[in-house]
Amino acid sequence: MKIKILGLILFLVITGQFATAAVADDRLRIYTVNYPLQYFAQRIAGEHAEVVFPASPAIDPAFWTPDVDTVGAYQDADLILLNGANYAKWINKVSLPRRRLVNTSTGFAENYIDAGSGAEHSHGSGAAHAHAGVAFTTWLDLRQAVRQADAIRLAIIKKRPQLKAAVDKNFAMLESDLLALDAELESIVSGNQNQALLASHPVYQYLSRRYDVNLHSVVWEPDEYPDQSQWKTLENLAQTHDVKWMLWEGEPATESVENLKQMGIGSIVFDPCANAPAQGDFLSVMKNNLAELKSAF
Image (cartoon, rainbow, N blue to C red; front, side):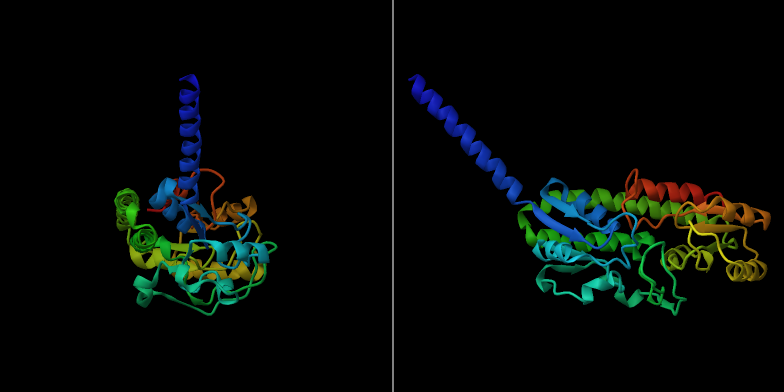
């Protein structure tokens, strides 16, 4: 009798381990081309997926190129989430499985913004590039972010129809969070529609359009002190548009902040959050952005 009981216990343990392994193996493996898509996908899929964004936090993912091994990891993924709007140009130079590609902004592609032609520059040690063609930080219009998240929801359900109820529930909570941010941002800006702002980089086009922000961009890096020609360009803009605040993608150099202050221009950090933050997540970064923006409005 004892032998039979021990045998039954051993059987249950072994089958339990196999069941656990089967659940783990059934998780979707999702790769993304930026952090916002990773955040959206993980919120929506929850425990049912491993969502990977492999770029280094020190690199702008819009202009990042993965190495051969990382491209191979993308190719092996169950889903590859793209931002669209000509974001992550490397995807046009490699072979990726078409049936696993999800362009999350296809639904509003007719509303892409033409970024025009920009001056070539580099971010730190990154390769030289220009912000030309199509504006690509689509998620800074938070209603567009909701549509990108919905495209992810549909793609996950297509891959795992049995997860529809859980995925829909998770998406509804994410949608609620994003729309709350959208409403708050709209409320902040509506308090002073005439307020003109400078931007340190031409990445806020969708923010400007959605929330009717009077915004004018230069091409500065937060960690680099601008040269004389850059200061002259800014001075001309400041005189023409009577700006009092400047948006920075990241924490600006102290010397830049002090010089701007002498010109009567304050500094605000509004992080587009294309990379995973050192602390917090997409939602907390956006809440910090809104808190900063209140200073100007």
